[in-house]
Image (cartoon, rainbow over all chains, first blue to last red; front, top):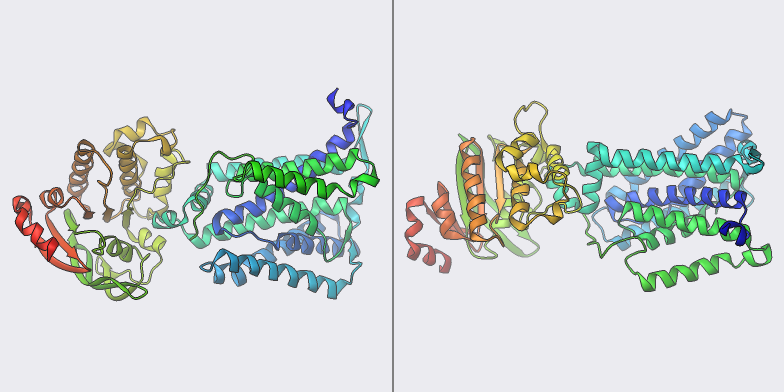
Length: 302
Length: 234
């Protein structure tokens, strides 16, 4: 009823949920690394972009979809590990500002490599376009990608939650994100925890890249860059230091974008980012520690 | 048998000498107290042993093998456990999760330790196992911190002011637990502000001031406050 009143149809609702799911995965990926390194990885969108270019090559070479997706994961994971070893570890003891600027630098380097290699038009990743076709669910036509993205995001988040709460390595990660110094004194291996967080973060970037490439098959050097900024806003909005609030923040932003983008006429939806930015500013003025957190969290570095 | 040996240890933060040429030994089944005023270098000594404070010279040996230059997590995995100042409990984790975290340092070939060991020593922990550690009282958190250090089955236990902020009655509970831990064969190095109680409990106590060892006392010196005061003021 409310949906009908607001002129929201089921397909629009499903698309919004799907975008929320993709943003939630990105938020978790950014939040995990922030948790253990106190580092906002601004190059996260460029990791996804690299994965999307891998998908485009898979398309060009005529690889089967599952192989293209594996190739995409491989590229993102290798880049993540390189980033960890070449940038994060050497700079770990430096100030947060140094690390942030370093990830900016990485982001621009990757972006410019893409620009030089593939030009401003980039490449097309079209082979997953079949997921654009709708499924008929009791007379309501919902795009396959929406269902796939919702299910995939839910499965990933549940698996991650199980990993964090039910396994020793998950416990070590949570402890490290609360108080890394004490965790190390108890025998928690810093490099293993950081490496694990970077790997999972990379895997989530790969998953998000696959989903987003269906929505935006034209892969350019700035692909996923606006989304990364929106997700960063969502993560800050939810509460940077808490995995679940950060995820909810990412989801909320994605859901709001999907919903408003679906119901506003296109003459108005170009102002959508401005609306969302304004809403974020208001929220941060009212709840500076984040929308979904209780009280302030101490921020401490290794 | 000497479990922990500290030899001519010097620790420096920038231009500040925190510890100057400190030597001490702790044998298995022995409590050694390290007392002294604020800023004497007690905590710095413990953190230097753990590899989390900068050592400029000297050596730290566990069972005769040096641990200098190792990372804190590797020192912990070699068998030295620290109960840090202020307890450093993970308040958002449950009591049992805090204990499971202590297992990170447990060596594969060891059969001892385990979460049961903490529950045996402090039955209260078993009762509160699924509660968030943050809701425990200060004394309960201290017991959790000690239990968390013991689940890894270490050879050496370092404690940094375990009585800080605790009511005298709770201090009794904690100190009584320390004697049981010693009797279990651990080497215990106890850093404390409560000088008299530490001297009475420990097999021997060293007085540290300005990074130097001033005096060594035995349990029978606990009543001799003049000697203590003199060491503090020297």
